Image (cartoon, rainbow, N blue to C red; front, side, top):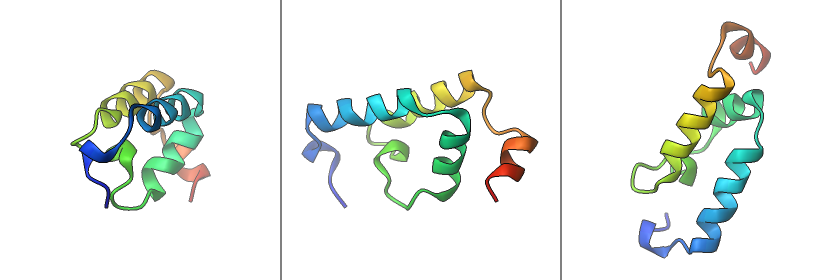
Length: 70
């Protein structure tokens, strides 16, 4: 797994752009099925906060979303 210090600014920016372009259902799928070590959920990177904030703004996990992504 890549160390936090090994991520370039461009990689972080690309991932931030990806987060900003995701729909609520995309984010729910990503959150449920992402592999361990996914940069968007690593606590040593700033992306997890951006992901959580955007997902919450979009409505987060709802029962309907949860059923839709089984």
